[in-house]
Image (tube, rainbow, N blue to C red; front, side, top):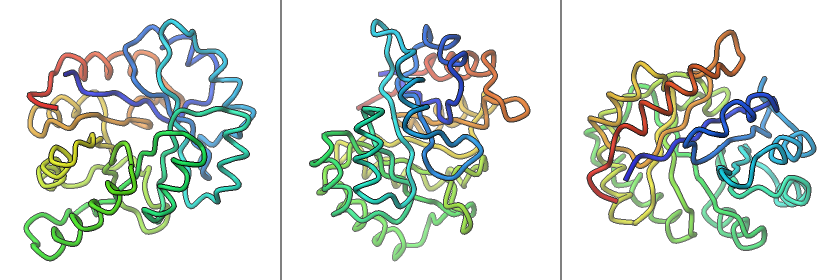
Length: 231
């Protein structure tokens, strides 16, 4: 199976027009405070520009949203996936999934130095992931932790921690997606060595803060030339 590709931080209709022929699995729209932030009406307009014949699933990125906020956005934008990027509990994830009828992606922040080799941290990590799995999350995403913004930093974490998460994901039957500092120059190395089920990119396919169509195309091509050895 080819790894999944998520292109995040879409803000312009012309970007969608230029990339929707590519084999992209998910398009992300950021509702959390960010220079890429959109509101529900903007997201609905962008989603409306997608052609039904080749339509990626649409993802809304939120940090610590209330259920009411999510309901308001969903009423206007009709997202396929809600990506929760803060300290949302497994119980909140379950509630959102059940009440909105969407898939849930849960971010797991990883410090830049990583946490490989610490048995206590690994045990705590697995316990927490088991709780999210029981709550019905549809994917777990690793991103570089930042104490100020949580994630979305454009920086990589230590990839040596990935195998522990991947083993858990395979056993749980939940895709593992890796974000954080990816671009066309390092994504092939990531996939070849660690075989995540998917990758997520935003700033790595931008030039001067604007989505670069050539970079998106090159990134997608690099990802899709790989195939995972198992589910």
